Amino acid sequence: MKENIKTTFSSAFEEDVHIGLTTYPKYLLSKYIYDKKGDKLFQDIMNLPEYYLTNCEFNILKDHTSEITEIFKSDNGFDLIELGAGDGKKTKLLLKELVAQKIHFNYLPIDISENVLLELEDSLKKEIPEVQVKIQQGTYFKTLEKLSDYNTRKKVILVLGSNIGNLLHTDAIDFLKHIQIAMSDEDMLFMGFDQKKDPEIILEAYNDKTGVTAAFNKNLLARINSELGGNFNLETFSHWETYDPESGTAKSFLVSREEQNVSIESLGIDIHFDAWETIHTEISQKYDDAVVEWLAEEAGLKVTHSFVDEKKYYKNYIFKKQ
Ligand code: AVJ
Image (tube, rainbow, N blue to C red; front, side, top):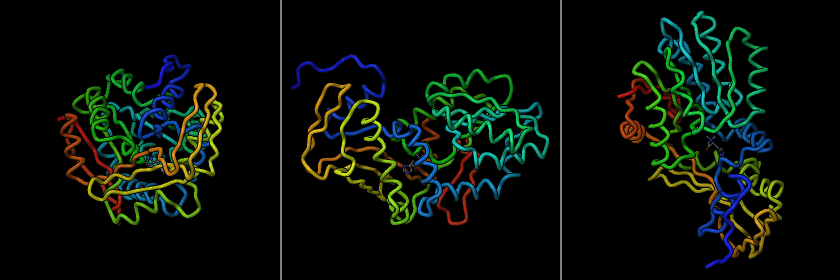
């Protein structure tokens, strides 16, 4: 047992890195990938030919725009609240249609990244100036608490990109439950879930030939280096992806190619790695209807509609309160 275990930290990042790298097996939380460089790398991932998720969801929204906006609209207008808005490329399909149909709504994009939100606001001003937009920076869980403040008229909550896939089922249920509690009977949740499919296609989506996903994964180490004074040598770690077709879980790892010590100045510790020791960094869960219905049921929600792309790679579901 270690003595002098550090108990005060100057940020959640510091504390979570300390916990994750001093436990066995080691892990880091994927939410910390997204600093400015991580945001940029994720944009690059969305443009990869292997990363089918973005195009599939784009196609679903493009092919069913009027059907979806018809379901969303309400006589006295509604609030469209998007969690993890990103660049809004997919959402803009819906926004344009809502504007064209002269449907009354406010758009409230929420994202963890202030940069991303400011860019989104700017692009909306140029492309669809009619949209009433109010950006909000924050983590999912903090903003979930604020959701129930929007209770004077119908609200539609959007969670695109299969972002829920980063959560273990128990956490996903918890997340859905928080949303459900903030919902009224007429409110809707519109959410993307990447589907189980040929394991080869899933593996390739997280193991692209050009190494963008590897750089994205290793950004966790780069961030520890720049923010916490770490001395990780990124070249001594390999990106490794696995997919279990039974559970539908894709898992990302960083594997130390050699025995080494890495020091992290602001934590005042040296981390030992055995050769081939792993750091688990991310899960990207894949779903089918039965699992989505089970998650919904557990969270007090029910599926009312679903939309699928041509290849049946991806689905968007609409949920209401049970
Ligand atoms: C943003 C969580 C949906 O898991 O597919 C992409 C993140 N990780 N490539 C995903 C990611 C590696 C992405 N999500």
